[in-house]
Amino acid sequence: MLTPSAVANAKAQAKPYKLADERGMYLLVKPDGARWWRFDYRRPHTGKRNTLSLGTFPDVSLRIARERREEARRQIADGIDPGAVRQEAKAAKMRAAAAEEVAAYTFGMAAREWMARQDVAEVTANKTRWILETFLFPEIGSVPLAEVTPRQLLDALRKVEATGKLETAKRARVKAGQVFRWAILEGTAEIDPTASLRGALKTPKNKHHAAVTDPAKIGELMRAIDGFTGQPVTLAALKLAPLVFVRPGELRMAEWGEVDLDGAVWRIPASRMKMKAAHIVPLSTQAVAILRDLYLLTGSGRYLFPGLRTTSRPMSENTVNAALRRLGYGTDEMTGHGFRSMAASRLNEMGWNPDAIERQLAHAESNKVREAYTHAAQYLDERTKMMQEWAGYLDALRAGAAVIPFKHKA
Image (cartoon, rainbow, N blue to C red; front, side):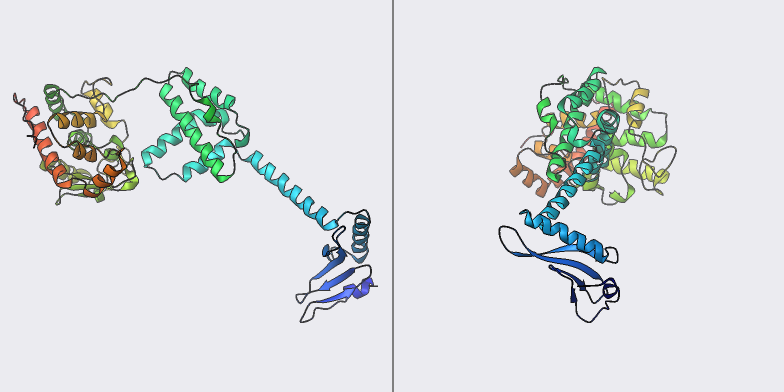
């Protein structure tokens, strides 16, 4: 049998060694000086040999180690495997810790993690964040993710619906569903409560971006833009918008590093495009002239259209729309996004290749085979010619041309 002094004076050696006590218990002395209490026994029912740790010296004294050995022996006598009991206790502790972690993991935490993993254009990310933080976080942001019920989510969405924001309520449901489906894949949720909400919200009416498409009225719009007396940078944005017809967010966040004035091309990186695919905008001679004048004003900075308060950020997303309102165009007449509808409508009627038009609009192609072809070829030569003739067409309308030239179809 071991004595307290023998245990205290046990010295480390080059190899591990044992100091035996009795009834299967011993002190294992390791080369690093650590001293472990061990108890060897045979498992009840199977008779297989097993070793149970009883702690380390000096935290566990010889007396306490023996008490733990005797408790293990009593369990064995009752047909209980002390090793299995300890494993189950550890598993229960881990389950309890996991349950606490799940309870502390809220919808808001999951949503923020999901947003951080999204590879989308900045404007899309900002809209998603706005929807979640404004309409869902106040209602269910602090609720444990696993405890969010369809009823809770529906109540939150109907509060949005009650304000008349039907489209926003719909988008909030979609975003919540994306969060839950991501959480399911991550193992932090088991169900998507939005699945049972289909049809529970009012259906928003299809809302199209207001746009001027009548040729005579397009001419009036071009002349109105020429007469704009606001900020020179805003005027440049107004003049360029109909010539490039990109999305408003892509226009206002344009950077000088993307523009090749000598090559007459604007290359927008995939990171700033809604569809996450790089986009090429051929620049007409008219567009290049506007940009050369603009370069004298903002060329020393990052953005073509910097904000009024700071050049480190682009102009506000409402700048172009506000300028159109100042020109007398209501929200039901023309918007910044409407320049895209205007170009799409007229170019199709003028007989240009629909594929070239869609590619220039950077629309997603529903037909995947066709998509692969259009993205590879890009119709760049045809688009370059189209953009120049479109600029000339706008000039003619601005001048009040009575006869509108149409492209001859092959």
